[in-house]
Image (cartoon, rainbow, N blue to C red; front, side):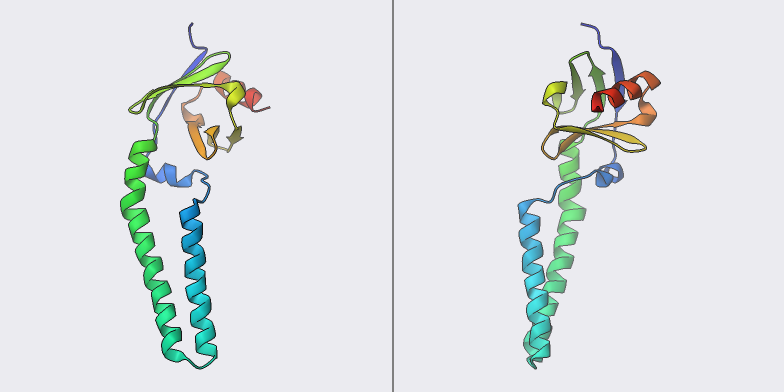
Length: 152
């Protein structure tokens, strides 16, 4: 079967950071712990326990900076290299296929979780929180209208 449309996708780290993502449970737990350190530090300062208060605020600040450093400078680029899609995407009548470093995948339009459209991109949600991102710059007019109709 011959594809109706074909488009090449390629993303760099800066583009990936713009994509909508859902917070992971670990990040939510970390945020709650950091907020607890901040709350306990402030209440300790207000009640006169300055050593404890400054200690808790210092722990919150150091943990925040360390987590940001670890996540954004080490883990995120490695994660992006594993997950990022680069290669052709073929659109057929009832499904689309991706090919790239991670292999060949086929997705049925009926099983898409949703399609989000911005001014510059289409986000085809293939699983909860996992998207195939199609840049409109690389698309033909027919493909943009096809994806727009598919969104409806």
